[in-house]
Each structure stands twice: as C-alpha cells, then as structure tokens.
Image (cartoon, rainbow, N blue to C red; front, side, top):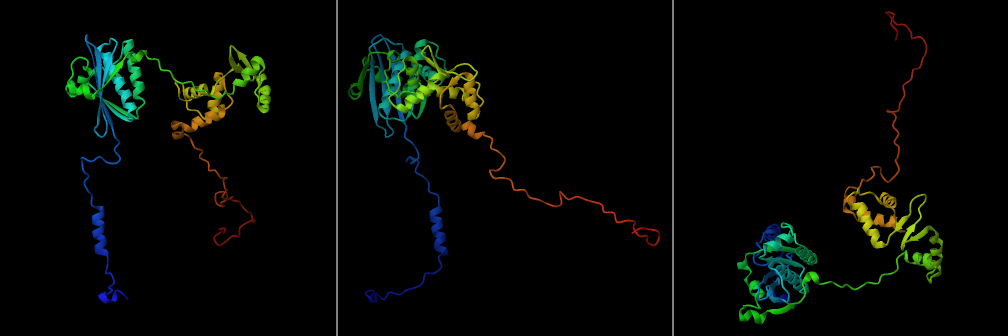
Length: 352
C-alpha cells in the first residue's frame, strides 16, 4: 500500500536467451594472468649463496640467505683452524645449510662458485680424498633434510656479497661488517661427533625369555610369566643371542622388530628379490634361518605397502560368486534311429 503512490507497474520478464549468452561470454572469456604476480600454487624458494676462502692471513666464509620475500641474512664464518680452499668451501656450504634449516626453509636453491663442490654433490665429479669424501657425506645428509633443493654453479662476479663476507677478517667494507653476523668455528665439521639422546624403548619379545633362560627371572604379570614358562623350552641362548629350535632343522636366529624390518626389506626388495607374496616371503625368511613371532603379519603388511607388488599383482579370473550352470538343449541333444519295419513301395518301385 505504501508503494502505490509511486505508480509502479508490473511487467513480466521477456526471454532471457540473449542475456544468458552475454553472461556466458563474460564468464568464459579467458583473462591473462599478471606475469609478475606469483600464483597461489607456486611454492616459495629460499636461496643461499656461499663462498669460502683460505689464505695465510686467515680462513673465512660468507653466507647470504635470501627469503622468498626478498629479505637477506648475512653471516660471516671465521675458522680458527687451517683449511684448504675446497675444505673452506665445504665448511661454509654446511654452515649455509645449517642456517637455512634454522630459518625453517623447506625448499632451498644453493648457489656457489665452486665447480668442484657442486660437481661432487651432484655426482659429476668423483671425490677421491678421504677428507673430501667425509665432507661430501655430511653435506648430503644436510641436503636430505629439505623437501626440495637445487644446486647452481654461478660465476664469481655474481657471488660478490658472499665473497666479501668470506674476507671479513682481512678486507671488507664497513657497511658489511655492521650488518653481518659473525660466527667463529673452532672445530671442523668432519670432527664433530653428534650426540643423540638415547630413547628408552619398551622391552621386546625376547627380553623376558632371555631373563628366564639365564637366571630364571619372570615378569610380574602372572599371565605373561606363564606364557614365558611355556615358550622357554623351544628356545636356546648361545653367546647372548636367542635361537629357536625348529622342527627337524637348524636353529633359527631370533630378531628384534628393527632387525626384522631390515631382513624383510632385503629379502623382498634386495639383490635377489622376487617380490613374493606374504606366505612365500615368510617361508623364505625361515629357510634363511630367522624367526620372530609376528613374522606372517609383518610380511603381509609389508607386501601390501609395496607399490610394485600392488601394480603387478595377479588377480583371480574366477568371479567371487559360484557359477550358475545354464542348460541348453541343442549342444547336448542326441540323435537316434527308430526302426518301424519295411517302408511301403510306391509307383516306380521306390520306397517312401
């Protein structure tokens, strides 16, 4: 009632074919993406430029770590021990990887002007000296901690910032010494022994058997103690190693869960592998002289996780249901002869 004063008239909407075509053209017209703007699916990359130097005045290294947003972190390493040029390159490269990991970098693009270091890490150049082999192994261990990484050899002219940081103890511009973080390295990376915390794991299945066979100790749980007493006669302890007596065969070496994983992987995917099924795999392990209680279950789980076995597994051709026989008359019909006597003769002495 309030809108009647505006003289509003109602008209039915005409056909919408023309408007639908216009909307379709607008929605489906391809739009050019801006080239400078990264897409949402593009993952960020960190870049680390490293350079090491060795001289009579001192040994040093320079690291320039660039974040995906363009922020740069400068770090100078001062080595308190004598190094060759190649060893200094490895030391600063390991320091750059350590710094990138501290900054939570997942994808790293490594830039260095040392052709030897990049070649050895990419396996195009062979590392022959013992110290270089050890440096290479440590560097590869650090690289494996990243989701993706790339190694690029750049000319020395494109690595000037890292080169100046490597000579911070000798000659460096004042602005570089103010913004760079200086760290002194006292011990070479190949001489550092990593100490990892010891994880106390739960007793494995052989713990109580060894204790009962050695000095007769039993677990506090009565059910477990009864099980240990019943199983102990089938086992034997030789030189601190537990063996199981097999039926008419040699003694089987008992394995822990970690040792069992190695044996399953070697037998199934090793040099003489055949990618057998779980039962065949368990029988082959027994023939090799090994045993643990959950052998069949572990083999079955490992085969199910194997991509090759799942890809080339032979499925049965028979259906899961029973066959339903279909009887047809013609293929199994029999022909017979019925004798009714002599046929009557017709005209011309011909029988009918």
